[in-house]
Amino acid sequence: MIGRSRRTVLRAGTLLALGGATATLTGCDPLGRGGQPAAAPDPLAPLVDEALALAAAHTDAAAAHPPLADRLTPIAEAHRAHAAELAGLIGAATPTPSASASPSPAGDPAAALVTLRTREQAGRQSATAACAGAPADRAALLASIVAARATHVEVLR
Amino acid sequence: MTAPAGPTEALGAALTAEYAAIWAYGRIGVRLTGADRRAAREAEAAHRRRRDALVVQLSTGAGTVPADHAGYALPYPVTDRPGALRLAVEVEERTAAFWRAAVAATTGPDRDRALAALVEYAVRATRWRRAAGITPSTVAFPGRPS
Image (cartoon, rainbow over all chains, first blue to last red):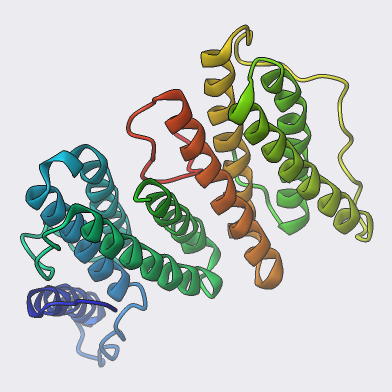
């Protein structure tokens, strides 16, 4: 993934830790007959981080280039909605909107749009890969996320 | 819209949506001119291609192929360009919803094709919104029933 910052990585760790804590509690047997092993990280966890990083990139670019805000703000909101839905599927806490979690946006609006487009295309590919192998109950959400990112590329042209 | 039980049902449902989309574009196209009209023709051609592919695919299976109807009910009469553009958005979103359901009901190459259809129709809905001046021109969850 392009431009994942230390802060994003840290937040990923927090989400995973929350998931692990839940698994430990629910796996605990009150009669002490031995608990279940800690759950493996959910394969969707990286997609939560990716959605939050995409949201932050759009928010930062909108702040740096106010004329672009009308285009970028709805896209940032969509990414945050994706992160919340994905976190819900995983059973993790709903993530909080990120502050600056991206490299600083380009000084030139056109260059900022190119950067965002590239990131949306990468995000579309990772969501496509996740959708291909997902169980039915996750595939529909992932498919909508793929489609949303494709529409974002269209709007960023 | 309830989720169809299996792949054949989901693809059959997508086929009925493609029939209705093709019919609706006949009503949309006559209200548009220039670039809008060309875009409507391209959209209609895309729905015809998917219809044809589905008829072939479902004909080789054990089930029956859903039949086309002579006409479909429009949500509102289309009398001018704004109405035509608004209906085009709705047609793409509704058809995308059936393909989204097909994504969940299928696996492998069938799922890949269903996803490609969902993506294509979502992008086209965004283009129609932009043509109509509807903002925002995107939705957070394309194809998800509201």
